Length: 428
Image (tube, rainbow, N blue to C red; front, side, top):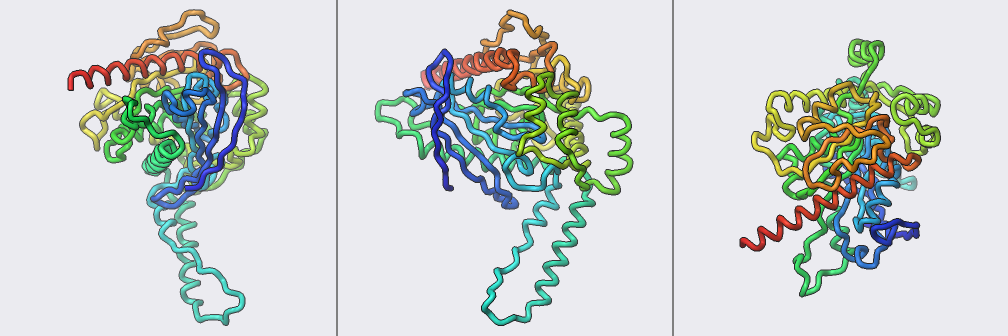
């Protein structure tokens, strides 16, 4: 695993002096199908916490998004002495994979099983390999047709969970290599900093699915202390005409057909669903890493995944019980943030997930009430007057307040977890 290191000096605010310090970038190679994923880790510049971060905050972005759009969250985390790590989901940002699509797991694994063609030696005499070459071309052509016809389902979520596990393993190995070794008088026994999570939109659904299934092995290997679910996208809101076209026509005729999404269309989506800030709309539409195409299968697969999650909540009465995992898994404390002017998510679906965590409390956009953000308990807060991305984008004053409350709550969760560990060590 090769890493590229850079440095940056940013201005910073209290409570700690320090902004973005050393940055490490690398390529995660997925073991299931070999898709390369772009990943990075940044350390704070604080003289103490750059050597021993108080925690590692994992960023998980949403659909048609990338990990570089969370400057406000990253800066706030560095000011608290947290390291920050993130990766671009497959097919998005700077990662590999089919752009704007949700390839089913069986198709993705079948494509990965076809060996690449051998290198061509120009100086060598021709060999009788026409049959093998023709067979390989036929297999690739058949798989391409299978990909285009593959119906949407939720089987792409296990692929994302596998990607997440590989990224977390790489991040843990990188932290062990770049952080100084623990001294003999340290009481942490060389343990890594605690794990925290900030996920947004579809990233919330992907993260919940990854830690609620025991077979993925993520919840046990990485005991997350706390997680912020920022505007969770459970089931996308699709208009009647678009829904009829997707589910009754394109789902059966061309589920993998790449529908173009030019800058003008992206701007219209941002204006209607994402934010009221003009600068953020333009930046989103012109983002060089934004996918310029989107398939019907992507939105239908996300909708199916959210539908299954809601069924589990309704049948089992818990967000953490699944049909394959009858016992509740280790789960972090949760802070769910809902946008009062949410229009991207189907009405009521995000509230159902939020109520499965804790009671929803409404907070005005300019309300001075601190809304118990510094208490280490499960929370669900709805910020009235804000849209889907207004709670973390850099151009709004509301985002600064929302993220500050997130960091206060994460710090409270860290303090509670540290106290719990001390009590357990004392009992032993």
